[in-house]
Length: 589
Image (cartoon, rainbow, N blue to C red; front, side):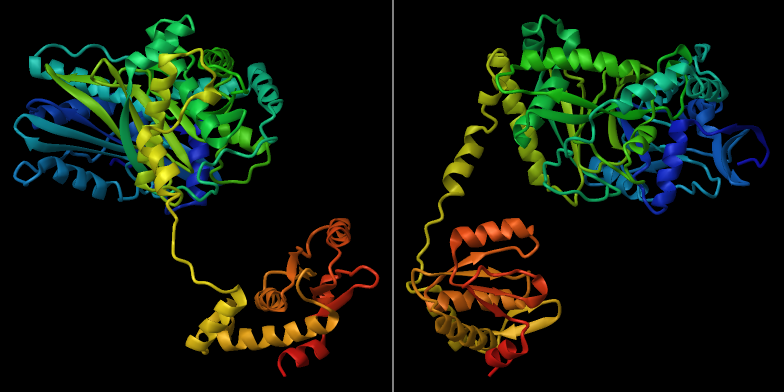
């Protein structure tokens, strides 16, 4: 790479968001974009490298290095690169495709030196046979987004085709990167930016918890899990027709279907999904590679009684309004809502890729296959046209800390079943559409409920004492470094049971147990059962009036608690304090 930059530019707002996120997680690989083109035909590697070199000169975003000087982060456009195409031949492998995919997986683990000003892209040509090649592309998200990768790929195919045919290359439509920077600055200084800020600030996005179908959250992993399937295009077209739309309305239909599916699965009347948008609203935006993509929340009502055509009508109107305000940055939106730095998910992501991913290299067709496209905190659903006209491709990415491959397979199977059922009768209420197919329904209703087991007779205290006889010194309870053997638990429970019996505990009586999670809690519950009484569990962190209500309603003959809890018994009700020295001596006598 040459050391003399010809141009220095500030970062785009989207680039700055990626820069900050990468600084928060400097070792993370989630801010990489990678894909490959599967070329069905021979490729002249030398000509292909010439085509790439020409496009590298044309696409200024690929020739930047990011530098930080004097507290300011900028991008410097470098006039040239010490660059060459990586060539990999796996045609001799037993399974060339598996070998190619293994090579790509390993290459994706190499971090880009973002802070060191290094090259921020990798291109490789993998030969699987004389008639099949993979063109592998990876870059840091700070230089290109998914739309830009498509722009670059189409231009490479165009230039390669011209070079092979020996004809002049069509004129490039790429504009200078500085034009993107100018338009980005103009927008952020404009009244439109303030109107967009007011719009997003008025959205009730903090009133509902994000829909996390796993029930928990976790930081995004470097490499999400991935499963793929297909939706029947005919089923999607049937939904479009019922809503009075032609086949071109498939983008809104799959967004409505996905949103309705997530709402049903989460048991919600309203669901918020994350919608990736290009943020490209001008001719310069649409023709210039760079990082502009954005992710914004789309709230979709799915009330009781709603049909898929109702949801589609709402989605179509809402998306139109959202696209008018798509340039307002997600980072600004999160900051306005008080979300801390890092990755925050409003809900599952639904990414609709409506632009054409088909390529042609000198008469040989190629299909694009995305590998990674930024962070996946939870679930990300990507839907795009397939090379087969009768179906849509569905890629489901998931955080491996939250989901398994089986989870992804089940989601995709349910979504296919859900779409087919709605296509049969688009006017049926969504709430009545069966989510499970016959196999999953049998598993849930029959296999999982086949819980018949031979159970031992006797009471719980008797069974516990049998275990004490078998393994008296085995560890029974562990809490914050404290361990109690079966013998110790049994002896302490027996002593506490005697104290309770002295207070009048026995069958048909209640004993309140107001203890935090601790080893003594296990002892206390067992002791109550040994007396023949029933225990009333009380969380000592409940409000005082809530505790008083429970005690008044249950009318226990005794309350087991700690003096430090501040739980008071009703007048005339005994109270045993486990942290009282006298009680401790009695339990350990």
